[in-house]
Length: 396
Ligand code: PSV
Ligand code: MN
Ligand code: MN
Image 1 (tube, protein in one colour):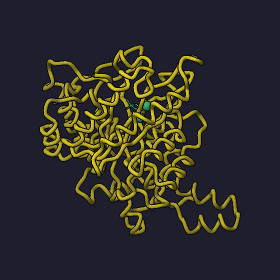
Image 2 (cartoon, rainbow, N blue to C red; image 1 turned 90 degrees about the horizontal axis):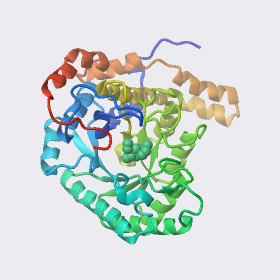
Image 3 (cartoon, rainbow, N blue to C red; image 1 turned 45 degrees about the vertical axis):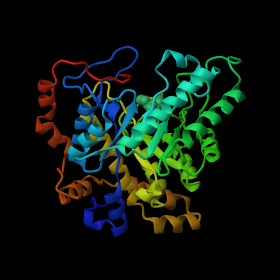
C-alpha cells in the first residue's frame, strides 16, 4: 500500500509531544580530527580546544533544535576553568552533558585500569574518576560515563574472576563519590583493544555491576559494540524493562566499532531500536535515558556529519512514532504474522522528511538544516579564523 507522505497535522498529539521532547547529546570528540591507525585527515578550522568544540556543537543545535547538550571526555577536554566552559556553553545555547572518564591512554594502564593487578594503578584509575566527579560539580553534569579498555589478550594472562572482583570494588568507591542526583553509567563492548577477553564485554556484565551498585547505576548501550547479527533492539527492550538503560551511544557500524554516522549503515535497525523506545514512552526525559552520539568523522566534515546523524535519529524516531500500535497489537494477538510485520514495515517505509521539515519551520528552525548550514559560510569562517595552535584530535 502506498500512501502520500504524512504532514505534521497527521501526527497524533501524543506522538507530536514525544517528538518535541526528544533531545540528542553530542560528543565533543566528534568535532576534533580522527582517523584510523593508517591516517588522520585534518580539516581546516578544526577546534583547538574544548571552547571551540562547544561552539561547533552549538551549530548543530542551532540548525536542528534537538541537540542541546555536549558530552565531554576527560582529560581530552580538560580546562583550567570548568565554570567558564559551562558559561561559554550556555552563551552558545547549549550545556555540558555527560562526563566521560578516560583511563585508557596512559602507559600505566597497559594491563588495565580498575581491573589492573596492581593496587597502585587501580588507585590511580579510581582517583581519576573522583576527579571527573569534581568536574561534574562544576559543569552541572548528571552522568559519569565509564568505558574501560580493560581486558586480556591471552588466556592465563590474569585471573578473570579476580578482575571482576577488583572491578566491583573500584566501581563501588566511584559510585560512593557521586552526588545524590548523579548517576554512574557503565558502557560495555565485546572486544577491542583486548581480543581474548574484555572485562565488561556485554550488557549482562554491565547490568550485574549496576545492580550491585544501586539505583543510580545504569547501562550504556553503544550500538557499535556488538557482534554482527546481534539483535540490539532486544537488549534495549530488556534494559528498559529492568529500568536500567541509562544511555545510548548511537553510531553506525559496517565492520567493527566504526563510529560512523548513526543511521547510515542500518536505518532499519535504528528504527527498530526507536520503536522499542517510543512504545513505552521512553523519549520522555523522565525515563532517564540519555540519547547520545558517539561518533568520529574521518573523511567528512564534522559539523554536517553531526547534523546528518541527529537528523537520522530524528527520522527513525518519527517513523517509530507512526507505527499504528492498535493495529499492531490486534495483529499480534490474532497471531497474524504477515499483518503484524506489515504494520511495522508501513511505518518504516513512510517518508517523514516533509513532516520533519514542517516540525522545524514551526519552531523557527531551517527546514533543511544540511543546506542552511552549508550556505551559512561557518566552515569557511572557522577555517579562516582558527589559524595557529594544534587542532584537537581523538586522544588529545
Ligand atoms: C569505546 O569504543 C567508546 O565507545 C567509548 O564510549 C569511548 O568513550 C569512546 O568510544 C571514545 O571514542
Ligand atoms: Mn561509546
Ligand atoms: Mn566505541
